[in-house]
Length: 606
Image (cartoon, rainbow, N blue to C red; front, side, top):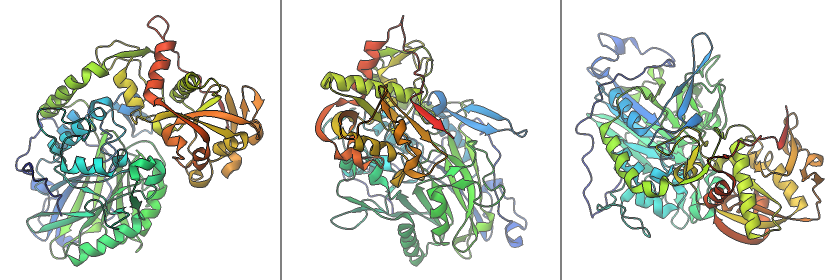
């Protein structure tokens, strides 16, 4: 069920020719095979040569996949542009990775010799994007994915950052409703279908986009079902999901797997924008050691264990983790579950062996491995031209200096130096709107990249450009002020580690003057030690009123903080990037750059 084309322009022809890069792809460890094919499948056939099996009953189908690109067309900087690789001796090595020019080269090289090749994605292709894409409502990324020959993707939560109407525009084309056309050509939309099986229009009860899509070639049929996490409304602004219902991932996948089976499609892949947490941060970690499914935890483990055995593999995302695992299905049989980190740093190469006699995948023969999108290969010229064209349009805005830093300011850790900087900027901005502002809170998920000392362009080392600030805070949330009682403020801090955040805590970044102890040896809300909470050295008075600055997403109760939605006397300010820009400009210069904050406001007991 391909996406329908808008009537005002023709669709590009799908993959009729390939642009093949000259460089060889870097092959890494991690291929997994649960068992060998039946003997009849191997007889007289070369497994990888000439596109693998294809001269008899079994046909190898290559599935290339990635997830959580987030509009990162240029190579991401700092830790966001590196992956960790475990070496044979157990030591760790970091590798610079990512960039659409390199991803295109690697994918095109990987397709060589594979006549049956599909490229799929696991959601969050756009949203929370750097300025090069985000400034133009992610049209550059959709254009790049078209050139990349992406066949299909699920929606992710970030596809709803600007609402369902904007997502429909990305799918079907047309210029932006308020900003118009950015070039002399009308935006054509995605050549590939976005799948949203579990995202329903509340009025009609039907999916807002296609629930599934079937890839066909010479008698081989593979169906794809796309879902995003059911909890999307908890992590997207209320306006972005207005009028939409998000249904259970497992129930939805199982429903459409039955429908595909009735249509004679027995080979099925689920594209699931939900993920897990592997036991190691190394992309080539053996996730099946010591046993299938032992090396991964989190939501995707439960989903994989309950999705019908009719589904042959799961391509996942959302957690920005890298893993290639087999997790037993409800029948107890191993099934491949993969994720390729984020920002285009990895891609996954999976071999699905299609049985022409049954129309199904020989699950025991499925193999998969993650590969690094290294930067030691030639750049894809068409992607370079695309980046250059959009960079020219963005340069007058993006190249402007907004501040100076003395060294990298990282976003990693429970409390991060960059988190402290951003929340202090919001407190300072809040005081310009209301001098009675007491403190500020910031959700770590809203901090999308580090600030790096090394120049990203021609601005010079230590210079923070508007484009770099945009990459850090791309959501255009406003800085809102609300009044809370001391009791409510204590409850907010406890909501970091209780309720929907108990299993995976979301530790807020806190402004200067607010301190407390986080005791990880305890459970639930008790992990926030109430008696330790201080503001400028004084205990929080449960009956007093505190003026709190936070971004509009948090102020609306986002990220599992319902108490933040209960504040009163709200004042809506400028966007959060403006607050950061004003703070950097006022507190730094070339001669006196900002030092990374100490990140010592939360005392952690482990």
